[in-house]
Length: 93
Image (tube, rainbow, N blue to C red; front, side, top):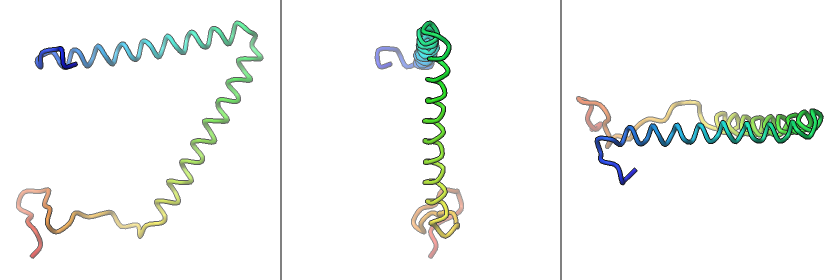
């Protein structure tokens, strides 16, 4: 991105994102084709295992998030007295 002029940075970023998306789609298509060429039972077994792994990860992250969320006092964090994010609100004092 540093080789592009600043006026074309948005175009370069868009092309970079599009190339990444196309590469991901092609990767999924190639893997799906190779798995299905070995028989449908291999694909269904692999997908079943993959879904179980993802479900386990989602469950673990959900439990950690729930434990972290309930561990606090439930009140949202507030800014310190020295910092003011809005115009007209100065430090308490």
